[in-house]
Amino acid sequence: MHKKKKGLNTICTHTGELEDKQYKGAVSPLYMSTSYAFEDVEVKRYPRYFNTPNQEGLSKKIAALEHTEAALIFGSGMAAISTALMAFLRAGDHVVLQRTLYGGTYNLVNEEFDKFGIEYSFTEGMKPADFETEIKANTKVIYIETPSNPLLTITDLDAVAKIAAKYSIVTMIDNTFASPVNQNPIDFGIDIVIHSATKYMGGHSDICAGAVASTQENMERIFNLAKNFGGSLSDYTVWLLERSIKTMGIRVKAQNEHAQKIAEYFYRHKDIATVYYPGLPSHLDHELAKSQMSGFGGMLSFELNEGFDAPQFQKALRLIKPSMSLAGVESTVLSPAQTSHYLLGEEELKKQGIKDGLIRFSVGIEETDDLIADIEQALDEVRSKPVAVDD
Ligand SMILES: *Cc1c(COP(=O)(O)O)cnc(C)c1O
Image (cartoon, rainbow, N blue to C red):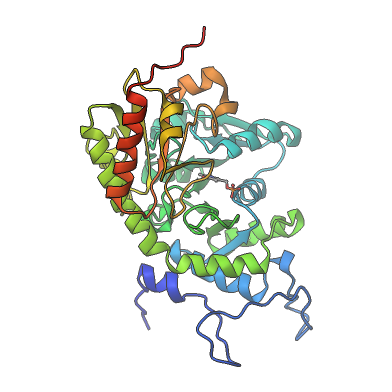
């Protein structure tokens, strides 16, 4: 019989939970065993086979969250990304990658792929035609990331999926910035969804993990490599991640709301030159974002007016912390040109439109009024200070 799919927060809270048959406890029991007696020779449970009870339970939750059949949980987002890519690429193959990528993914491709004889091209822009142009006879994978980091550009999921289907190319997306709360790429025809669970899934800046979700068939292919690469996640952290995801829906919705309010506030602010947030009608891809996202996320970026020193401004913040990571319940900021995107080099930064003074803001769950008050006091503090000139 047809069974109606469960809603977001019900999946977050319950899907994949393990029953405590012994004591009827409210939460999934944690199984730390690395060794399990054979019940039959078919199931050999072992953490690196990604099939301990806690791993299997959480995989079901993540697959349900991404509207697909199966998932695997990894020791980091990069373990998930590298394993997914390498499962579908071999020497002589070619991959098309979106130009604006998470720094670690860019480094993986740039530093490692030559060794394996894998060819790659980065797109010129982020329009569907930019992807089609790069396709060659040996292209096996198209890899995208939307919203992108740090300018929050939006890639058209449906259009890229259609182009890929035309050439029988597998599509992969890094869905970290949106989280499954705001975007389900499988519904738009994307084949494989990847997450750094270190971010919104974990949400409390205390878990490093990754996840891949897709059809049973695709996930079997990824599993076959994953068990050899060995990037599984400790069961203790799997269990913590399951707990974190229970509140992901309400956390991320609060972050959407706060980011929208702050983006609108920045938009009207006399000291702020530009704000990039897909939820603003002024954002170049706002209409596209509306068509494929159910919320616009907790990430935004902005540039202060000339005359304001961006590093000084960040130092003057008290509640909001300068920090490398993102997506926690606490608000953080960073300068991409000096930190996360530093390795790209000046020319590439320019090409991507990442200015020196750009500040990326990961909006947390604190009261918006307190965040705005912190921004105002920091602006007041640096308003009087001259910008440092290096010559
Ligand atoms: C953090 C991040 C990653 C890498 O994840 P790790 O868990 O640090 O390995 C990949 N993609 C995006 C968009 C990220 O923000």
